[in-house]
Image (tube, rainbow, N blue to C red; front, side, top):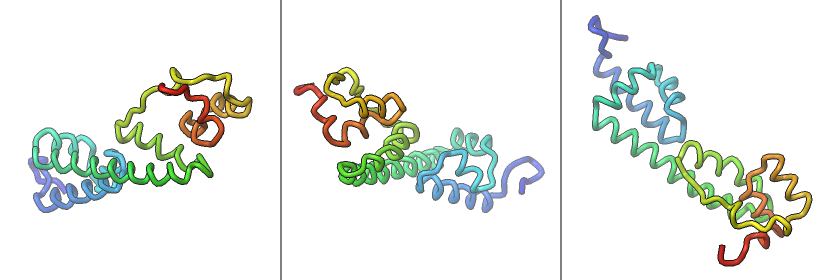
Length: 145
């Protein structure tokens, strides 16, 4: 609970900070980490702005989660030759949570080399990388592109 001056007790704050770091390290969002630690987001951001050591730990935890996910994506990519669905969730996580950006593949494609089924999958919102990794569509990438 809070002291009369509105500040958290030091031991409670330390426990909450540890819970947040552990949660972020596992790949959760900041909002989910705050919920797991029973901490208002405003307090989290106050700590982030006012405590350089805590901010560094948050950054490190988030970076470790991204590194872990990159390894998972690599492993999924190896399996994607047989089943491209392995990549879809991992790629989206890296893009949205990890700040990961891929170069646009659309500028390097010859759409005439895609089958109607592959074009439909892209139109239905399937990730382009998944379609490209699914087999024959790899030939649609122009050499040297």
